[in-house]
Image 1 (cartoon, helix red, strand yellow):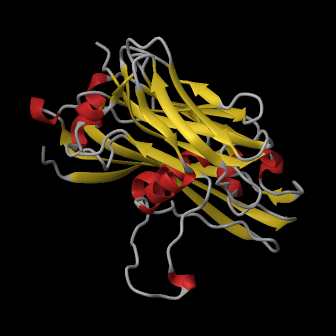
Image 2 (cartoon, one colour):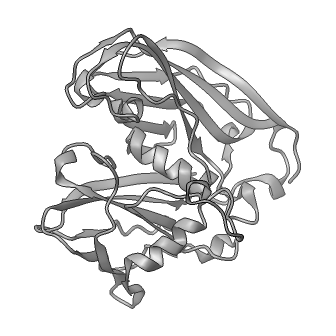
Length: 334
């Protein structure tokens, strides 16, 4: 499918209130165009901050949910930090953002992309969002408190705002060849403490297949803040296994295996001798996996008909926590 691509602003400067849910509905143009991604830009002015988190604006976004008038959920209350790490994984670069400063007044910006197509698929339109199928889309953004911005929680905070941009086809999808095969889906699972419950039971559904997932391993000091850490993520997991009642799909993998997967996420690699400061690195603690290796939609892991689907692991310590984000495709509803 070949359509000209258009970028269009949907709304700008919409205020967000701390510790609340802001809902956007009956605002999106549903003209039959195919959406490739939605880009959210968060903006605020901050006064002096005591011991700020550099990624504080992402921590402040507690949940993003996107659903359709057909009762389909595309993004199931995924936090800003989870989407940030997913963007790093899929885009091979971090979303643009302004790190929080320790002093003075700072204008800060943080971008997040909600993908409707995935770069590892040979046919990107497999999961494009066909807006002509819907009478309405609803976007919900849940925000946190000032304590999410810094260790001390002391900060002057103007009313933050959000802008929304859509990257889509310029004209409506008409040809059957250009229509999607399924609906993109992103979801996170509750944080687990490695000493109490070192596994997740994955949802089994006839209409759900997984393209991949990533685990984020961090210290328990960040408890209550999923996909966050105090200093850096941790490489403490091993014997990572993904199995169902039929077979194992990942079996007793080590941190070293996933460190290689992280290299595939980098925007570039060095093959000649360079200074250590020039070697690209990716944050520790990320354990990514793709079921789709050759670009085919059919390589996705079908969750239907399984009595149990479990992702389990062991940990080098008894104090860590871990978070899980899965992404895949769901069947289109009539």
